[in-house]
Length: 388
Ligand SMILES: Nc1ncnc2c1ncn2[C@@H]1O[C@H](COP(=O)(O)OP(=O)(O)O)[C@@H](O)[C@H]1O
Ligand SMILES: [Mg+2]
View 1 (tube, helix red, strand yellow):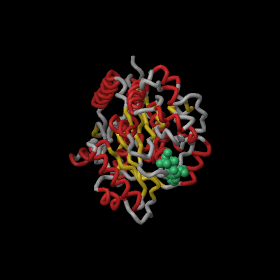
View 2 (cartoon, protein in one colour; view 1 turned 45 degrees about the vertical axis):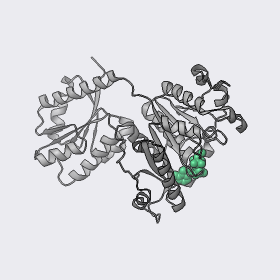
View 3 (cartoon, protein in one colour; view 1 turned 90 degrees about the vertical axis):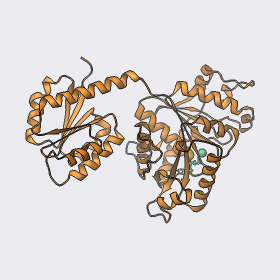
View 4 (cartoon, protein in one colour; view 1 turned 120 degrees about the vertical axis):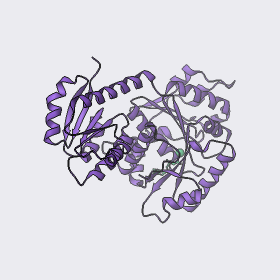
């Protein structure tokens, strides 16, 4: 028998509870790991429970809208979890709303156990197919802003940490701020080797050598550090950069690039190879105008607009300039906004522990973690507009 899938029952009434309890042992593909009284508690415990299936019972009238809102959040943030809904009411409109909010299956009540078994088998097959497809192709994500100090390094470091935690694999950060790079300081690491050691004078980069030049952080982040002496960066060309990215892509599922604040040939090489370019801004007119100029510049260079994602950092809902106004000035959707929390951001740097690595994540950490989740679940479309 393959490994059993785990299932959680949420707000099940007595009839559903009894049917499942009576038959669960004969469905050898699944194991009931918990019964939870309400969907909100289930959502809050998803990170630790990580069930393969949640069975939500709609027996209480009145809070259906709220249940669907939360199940929709679960389906976006935890795409590996299948959502089953059961209800005595079987109106087409209700079924449609359930499916639209991310449910895979809808059961009438009393629950027909054979129908339930078939649904479980479909999930088993889906999981097996996904396992055969193998790990997804590596993704390169560059983080950029023309102006310094808006949060590029903060984002690169924390997105890398979050992706490592979610994927349970190491994520790389390439510190491309060759003059003033500070990724290893953010993580309180003293690199033994750096990019200079990986690049030879003929423009070549050896993969094995590159691997030995990476510095590792306990949260699963591997860093290619900046040169110790800024003058050494002169010997590094965009040809080196292209090769470094090729090697990193073959070694890590996610490669984050903390770029410098310029349109030099090295950054342009990285943008060309990036699956996504995160353009960081804040809600001030000068920063938004600079972002608009950057957007126009990248469009003129012919980069695919779909890979550009606008992230508004240090956002406060009480700010005078709202997300809608930023989108109007940019003529482009804002993909994500990250709350302003200077204390948390500075504490993270001072302690060398990323915001996403804290036991009790602050609002900034949570927002970045959620962003990473969306990146990993295939809902990363251009039009998706999210404010944290
Ligand atoms: N969401 C945030 N809220 C408050 N301060 C932030 C936030 N993100 C970053 N910062 C702070 O802004 C400053 C610049 O961030 P940094 O990541 O170094 O920017 P960049 O790499 O673009 O120069 C740092 O002091 C950092 O702690
Ligand atoms: Mg920086």
